[in-house]
Amino acid sequence: MLSPIQTHAYEQQSIARALCAGCSKQLEPDETYACGECINEWLVYRDPNGDIANDDIQEQ
Image 1 (cartoon, rainbow, N blue to C red):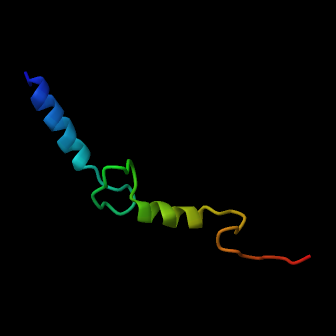
Image 2 (image 1 turned 180 degrees about the horizontal axis):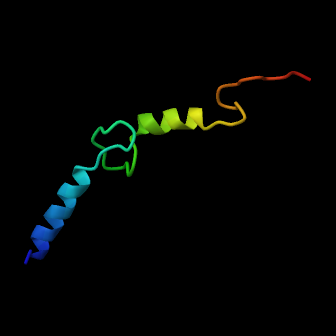
Image 3 (image 1 turned 90 degrees about the vertical axis):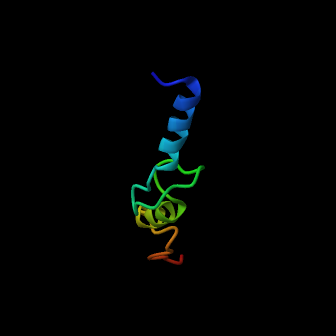
């Protein structure tokens, strides 16, 4: 059975091995599922109204 110190070390190593869901790069400590670059890219593609890309702006 692992000691508390060994358990903590294993947990920290597991977190350090986490990879980005989009590009498989190793995540930074403040990232959980995806790296900042992939999240920024996904935000642009998920913009249904074109607000970020300024698509189809109609002047009134």
